[in-house]
Image (cartoon, rainbow, N blue to C red; front, top):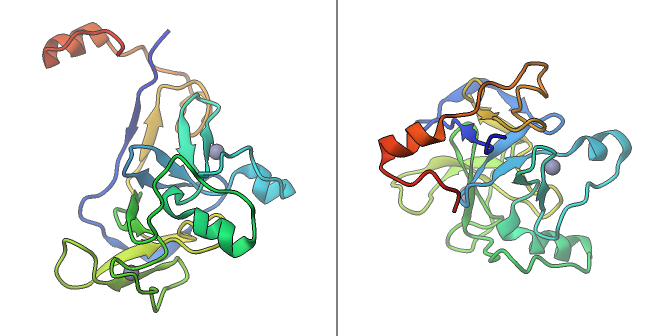
Amino acid sequence: MCFTMTAMLIPIDPVTAAEPTSLGTVAKVGLALDGVPIFADAPSVLEIGHMPALNTCGGHVDPGGWYHWHATATDINSVFASEGVDASCANVVQDATAQFAYAFDGFAIYGSLEADGSIPIGLDACGGHIGPVPGQTGGVYHYHANDSFPNLPKCLVGVVALNNLTTTAEQGIGSPRAQGGLNGPCPDFAAIAEKLGVEPTAP
Ligand SMILES: [Zn+2]
Ligand SMILES: [Zn+2]
């Protein structure tokens, strides 16, 4: 049996597309700063209106066995508050001004407030705008979470890499088997570990 390996490709110099791309069923949204991928609404939400079994931080485990987010976890308590839901995310630090992720088009995703605590203005249909962000001079395009679930961008304004999420997992997003193909051979962990000068054992 292989260990599961997953690779994600995100542009470091984002390029705006001619038209925004709307996020369909379980579309790939981005990569959270904690290394966890973010997907849009699950099929159960779109097709039968049922919520998948998410934890109160907006995440759960993929059929392929790995964890992913369906919401901006660092600002999800404001969603519960605005929708009158008696729940809270206890395991992720809540900060509505913090950057949560990079979208797969390379633009950053922040919480529902600007870094100075003000409410974002002039958001486009995707939930983004051009404005100041910490650590950058001048205005740059970025997305904001909103206060309704899922508090993610509704579309992506930039271009994304081909095959931007691939995994050796047997099921779930990015799996070759899920896309009708077959899994490749297991990676040669012994050779990789020797090249890296580390022990080829699981932590
Ligand atoms: Zn999911
Ligand atoms: Zn902003």
